[in-house]
Length: 133
Image 1: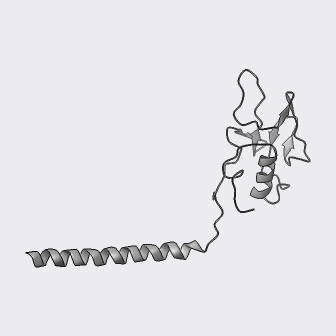
Image 2: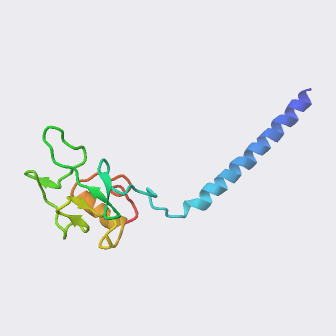
Image 3: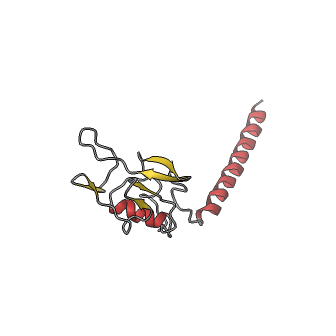
């Protein structure tokens, strides 16, 4: 009976070594790829509402309310007024107080959005922490 346990133990160790070697090879083959992180991001900054306007999804800029402050306004308001312009924020619509982040002027995609989010201290998971710029 002792011989049986020895054989089972040896086979189990060999199988474990083969499995660990396979896992190690899979990890090392993917290590050379520079995959941007995070791989995807939300359409709007965190806590902003995505609405449809003229068949286009746009982001509604939250209002500045002293009684109930919004958690993700950053520095886009000064003295209760929006400081954004169409030059600093492509796709910005002053009348509806929305931003179209799919506007073609956001030509570099996540990198330009990251620069904008960091400039105005806006938290946008997947954009403000994007690492492939």
